[in-house]
Image 1: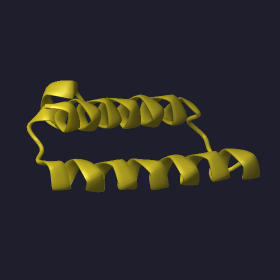
Image 2: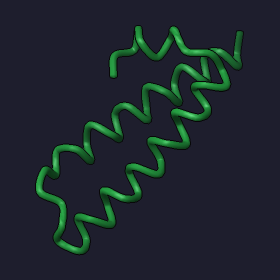
Image 3: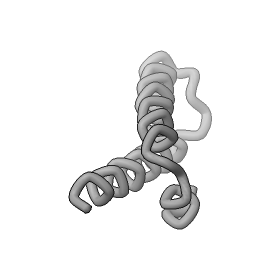
Length: 63
């Protein structure tokens, strides 16, 4: 997900997106630990998306 797409979301949507990404990251890590994860690059992508969302949330709180 691009930063521009994330910036268009409202605060409530950003919080929901953050929760969803944290849950997805947990599931990916669990799949990796059990040997069920085929594409390990998804973990890195999800972590970067989560970081983008958290950064934009932090920026909006400071304004």
